[in-house]
Image (tube, rainbow over all chains, first blue to last red; front, side):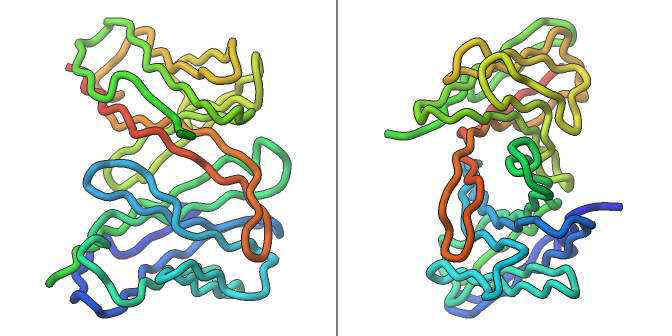
Amino acid sequence: AQKITQTQPGMFVQEKEAVTLDCTYDTSDQSYGLFWYKQPSSGEMIFLIYQGSYDEQNATEGRYSLNFQKARKSANLVISASQLGDSAMYFCAMREGRGKAAGNKLTFGGGTRVLVKP
Amino acid sequence: EAQVTQNPRYLITVTGKKLTVTCSQNMNHEYMSWYRQDPGLGLRQIYYSMNVEVTDKGDVPEGYKVSRKEKRNFPLILESPSPNQTSLYFCASSVRTSGTFSSYNEQFFGPGTRLTVL
């Protein structure tokens, strides 16, 4: 079974509107963390936001927020007020367990391509 | 400037011709890793290193070798490349970072190396 599932391979969003990118995860660990990365067409990986499994509040970073629903094992990324520069591939990733090796290893989903329309 | 560098950025080679992709970081990070990115699969970890002379396999290590003789460098070696190793490769280093609610290991990715094996 896939550990990270992103069910939306691609989506369009109108400029200035909000968009939600879905991410569900599978783990039996109590301690884990969820990340979102942005990959523009230039190829680099840009860290957006992090949510720890014990964090009681949803993470927010500027226009990015993470809708963390632990019981449903989902960690959806919400981008508010979309901009043309938000057009990119977005990856959800998870680290499981504790310890130096586990804490540094990321398991990625297949990604969602977002295209912002003017 | 704090960064992870990779060379070459683009490489086209032929089956069986040994190659090395270099990775260097100037942030004194202990942990480094290599990922490959393939369409629909996201990034998958190849090898990682927790410190000098300490390396271990990730999820897809077959056909790859690594070494960590110095803290800053973590080269990826393909002894006999095959077409199924055509991919986008990322090197990453990580450091413990304090987030809003919890700390996590923030990964710093290199710019990527696009490898084509004919």
